[in-house]
Image (cartoon, rainbow, N blue to C red; front, side):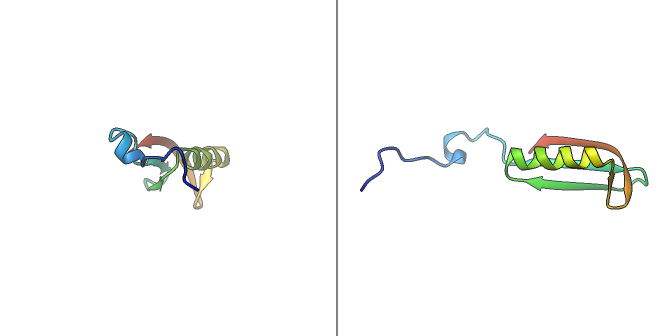
Length: 69
């Protein structure tokens, strides 16, 4: 059995597509953390979870942002 439609990898189809997503969190003590994700939905879910908590790794969150790489 042969498939009718072959899917092309995203990188070959659109080289300008985002390569990943990053969640950057800044803390009140001057430290920061960056989390990198391959899927937008994962980055968005983790960003929402961190923002809702208000505290991460035993430090208060000053700023959190999500961006495409």
